[in-house]
Length: 564
Ligand SMILES: C[S@@+](CC[C@H](N)C(=O)[O-])C[C@H]1O[C@@H](n2cnc3c(N)ncnc32)[C@H](O)[C@@H]1O
Image (tube, rainbow, N blue to C red):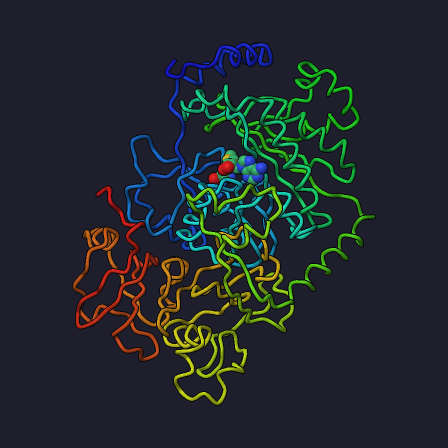
C-alpha cells in the first residue's frame, strides 16, 4: 500500500466496516482521481466540450465536473489561467450540488478557502444574488480572494471573520449556508499524505468542538426556510452523523433532507453513533435516524475520495414572521450611508490582525486604515438579488446614474476631482456592462458590491465586492479582476490570442506583443488606442494597453505564468 495509514484509524475502520473493510483498504492501492469543474460563469458546457483540450469523462454527481485522465496536467494549459475550469477533487464537488443554489439566492460559504466550493456556488448564481465567502485564517483568504477574482465572480464579498461576527452583521440573511467544515481529514489520506501526518494534531475531538460552534452559528445566519449543507472530508462518526444529530436535537425547527443515493453515495450511519458513542446516541435518539438520509462518499464505492454531506433545512413556519422582521430590519439598515469603512488586506503584521472573535478596540481601529467609503446608493432600495441595476452613467453624472452634487457647476474637469465620476467616465468609454449593486470606494479603490458598505462596517473585509479598479491622479486604472469577469462583447476594445500558436502563453507570461490594428475588435467606433481586453480563444484573461501596433502587457506580475 502506498499510504501508511495511522494504526488507530485503520483499527476503527475495520471495526466499523466489518466485511466491507477489505475493499475499503484495497482502494488505497489505487491512485486518487483528479477532476476539473467547468466555470460556467465564463464558458457554457457546450462551448467547453467543443474546445476541451483533454478527454473528459463526466463525474456522476456534478453536471459541470469531469475526471481528468491520469498523467494530464490541466494546470498547464492557458484555459486554466483564463479561469475556464477549476481543478477540484471529484468528491469535493458533491456538497455544493446538494445546496440547490439558484440565481438570486443569498449564499454564505462560511469555511471557504481556497475557494473551490465558492467558485462552484458563484457559477450557479450566474451573477445574480449574493455570495459571501469567508475564512477565519487570514493567510488562506489570499488564495480565496484570488480564486474569486480569477473565476470572474462579480457578486461576491470576501471576509476574514469568525462565524459569530458574521452572524451579528447578517442575522437570518442567507437562503443557503455551506459549512465545509475544518475536519480531521481522514477521507484525504490517499490524496495527500500530509493529512496522515496532521491527523494526530487535528484530532477528532478538537475538530468536533470547532464544528459544533460553526454549525450552531450557521442557524443564526440562515433565513427562515433556508438550507444548510454541512460537509467534511472525514469518516469519523463524531464529526458526521453525531454532529448532525446533536444539532437537530438542539434545533428542533430543522430536519434532514434526504440525499438520493443515485450517484453511488452511501447512506449515513446512525448505527455507528450507537456503537461508538452510546451516550450521545441515547441523548439524540429521537432525531438520530434522520442521519441515514445524509450521504457518505466512499473511495471503494465511487471514483472519488472520502466525504460526508448532510443537507438540513429550516422547517419551522412559526418562526417565519420573526425571521422576516429581522430580515427587513437589516435591509433597512443597509440603506444608511456610512461615513467610514475598513478594508483589511491579509497581512503578515500580527499587530495589525486581531483575533476575529475579539471585539474591535479603539487601539485596533487606530492601527487599521480608516478609509472613506462612499455609497452610490444612498437612497436606493436594498440590493437584494442584484435587483437595482446601475446603468453606466452619462458623462457629468456619477456612476450608477446618481447625479453628482459636487460635480455640478464645476466644469469639464470635475471628473479629475471625483473618483466616482472618473470611474463612470471609464465605464462609459470602455465597457458595455450593467453595474449591479452598490458602488463603493475604499480609499482609491472602486468596487461594485452586492451587499453594500453599511452592512460590512466593522468586519474584516478582504474584498467588499467586484474590484473594478483604482483612481490614480484623476485617472481610472482598471483592475485585473474587472477584466477576468468580462465577456469580450462587454469591452469596447478586445483582442483574441490563440492558445495554440504560443501567443496566449506569451501574454500570460507577461510579454509585450506586437498586434496590428486590424486584429483589434473595436466596438461602437472606439479608437484603437487604450485598454484592450485580452482574450484567450475568446475568453477574457486580462488587460493590455494598445498603442501604435504594440500591446503593453497589463497582466499582473503576481499572476504571471512562470512554470513555462
Ligand atoms: C475543508 S477547508 C475548506 C475548503 C474549501 N471549502 C474549498 O472548497 O476550497 C476548511 C476551512 O475552514 C477554515 N476554518 C477553520 N475554522 C474556521 C472557523 N471557525 N470559521 C471559519 N472558517 C474556519 C479553515 O481555515 C479552512 O480553510
